[in-house]
Image 1: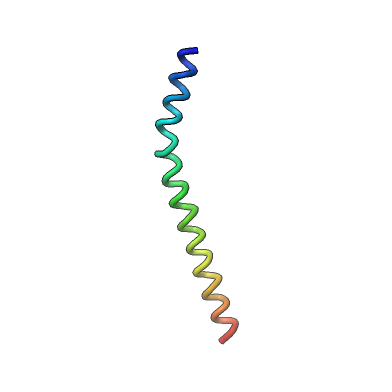
Image 2: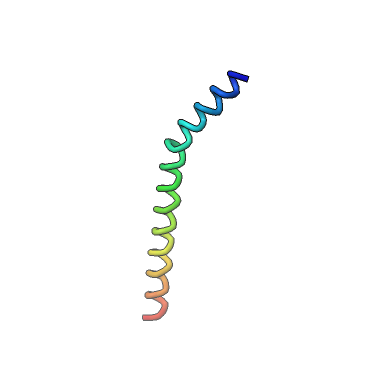
Amino acid sequence: MSYGAILVGRSVQTLPTVAFPLTALATLSLVLCAAQWRHNRRVVTS
């Protein structure tokens, strides 16, 4: 029981450390995809 509590506490502590780079990476890829799509659209229209 105590081992499980320690495990949960450790995972809760490490969660923001893991989630932050993942969120930043996902946001960056979304921005890059949007920029690429906009660029492609501009090329097609012009």
